[in-house]
Image (tube, rainbow, N blue to C red; front, top):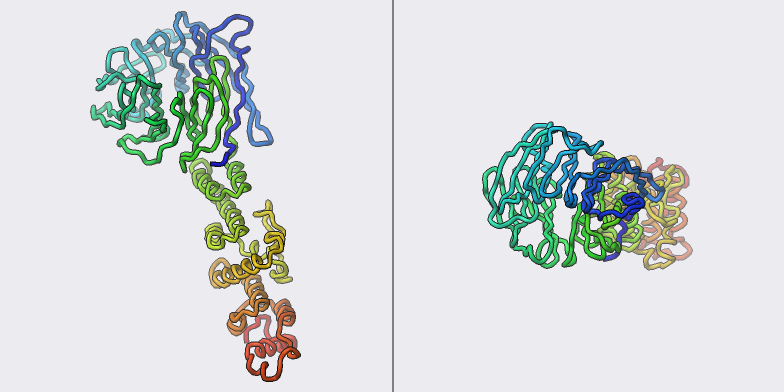
Length: 525
């Protein structure tokens, strides 16, 4: 698969911002909420930074981080996990098997001292079921053997909701509504904590590598499966997408639609969720954290924090079209529908279809081009204008800007190849004949019929008479001149030939009548 540039990797927090002049611990975890970036370290310190983003003309961005403050939590253990609950202005801090609530701005623990004890890991429910806007739902893996617990966390207190036993010791968890997706010692399962019903997914060996369990959307999860596969699973225990192929030693995963991003010891790899193909590889050594936060993807080593900045989807699509990768561009464009307002998407998608149509046309893939032109509602004059002198002299048409293709005319497109030019002209004849009586021709009938007459006359096509003797919108002056240019001159035929060639005689009769202005502006007789 050819490379796609979907992301650029930029630095956000350098080592100097974390250490200053003193020895410091390693980065253990990160959390990002809007412009607020939090870093937890191995020596029990939380750092708070403000991120400022500056857009670049290339469509990417750079980031600068300003340190706000840092606070030591008073333990001798690493800060294992950080989760922001912005609605409560609280940061949930997992350290030494205890979840502490701290203020997001001051990093001070809440005065009540509320905390959840006995936690090995936690996950926030992004599809909460409580209906209370003044709390967040948290699921933890308990230090109690084979146990998960569900809590409601308020500004200054916590409340246990449910405790559920699991068939094996859980190692990782993600939650959606009432559904827990759990990595156990030997398998992944979906567990409805409200009903207690469990659904086995597939085997997994927790002793060999780190499990990955990630919620990627409503009732859907991403898991690190056997054989280096990134597996998708719904709460019903089925997969609605084909797996993506990762390396065997993936240690983290993130989603930035329409891409799945994976981290291993040496690389960051980017796969499309739309066609499951690998699109990009970025070298990145010593990484151990990869997470996404509201569309922002963060990766970290033990010393620094970096951001994967996505290129705008429209630029990615245009890059694919420029590389003649039509199918990939169309798949990506369709996938972009969910992230773009409906009206803007429709305008963008029509243009992409038109561009794709011209790419297929230039490759003489006429059936594909015709379907793309129709689907993209192409102004047919864009196509006619490629053929020199076919548009009537009265036409006020100007090509789309920015242009839909790179060609000045058919001569450039075919590089003067007469056989290719003939094929292109036959295609246009067929296409114009098909669309002239449809809504595609509305407002452009004079342009279409005049171009069709010129093509028929130049090719000495049998359909010329059919066009002339039926109702048409051919422009008289252009058509008469073109018929004169391409008529069969009497000097080239014997009287017998002319009598036999009734078609030529009729054309010449029409021409003489037209030149004497006995016809109406239409060339109908």
